[in-house]
Image 1 (cartoon, rainbow, N blue to C red):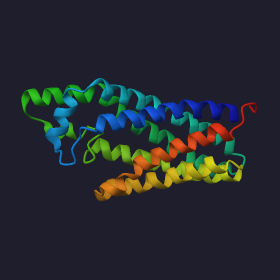
Image 2 (cartoon, helix red, strand yellow):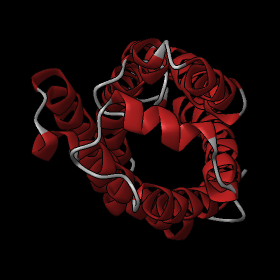
Image 3 (cartoon, rainbow, N blue to C red):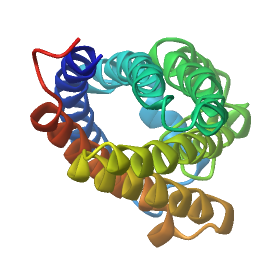
Length: 219
């Protein structure tokens, strides 16, 4: 199982780095003063980075689900009921995020283009734009990461019990910051909402630690 966890961690490490880079590039042109119409116009003509970012994010979500299932099988001997209770949050996170990300690839840009042509429906389309922090899609995305924060905290603590010190610490901190990020979405606090991005960075560090702490030869 450690070999499987290490392999998935390497794949996720790559996908997460790509996500961070693509997100930084894609969001560099988004202004803090942007309103619904600005986001709709931006999404109506997406560039290649925008599209590739959401394809990558969808793949990332699938492999994150796989990672947490492997963590469950690796850690269940410590406390099966607790590990299973934490695992329940994972498919919910996956379903929400796959929906939020997949519609950004084709559906939302098409709806945005139609809204601009007809000069109506900006508010409805803006609610579907995940990059818009005030949108329903943005809120659902934040909730999804907050839900993943629960198994991150539980499994992080259990990894510490299995002597995977750094993997456990950073996975646990990832969970804490994801919950802080949700609080930011709910309170419209841009500073607290950054917890999602900080959680992503901590998740990246945790993956790096898993690559080094999990052994290759153990199956």
